[in-house]
Image (cartoon, rainbow, N blue to C red):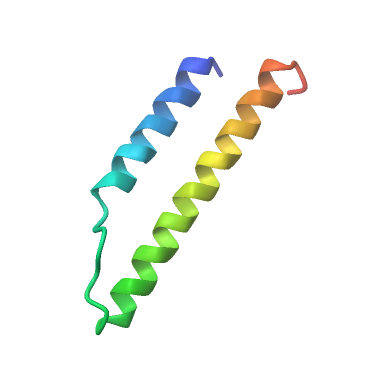
Length: 61
């Protein structure tokens, strides 16, 4: 994959993350938990994309 593809995917994920609500109703524990989990998974995926792109640029993949 070209570095542009990694950047495009990461950009779309960051845009999606930015559209998630900053604050959720604390009385709705399901919404709080789901929002937290989704943000955490997006952060993890961005980290993995970065590490994969680094490994690919070094010729390891």
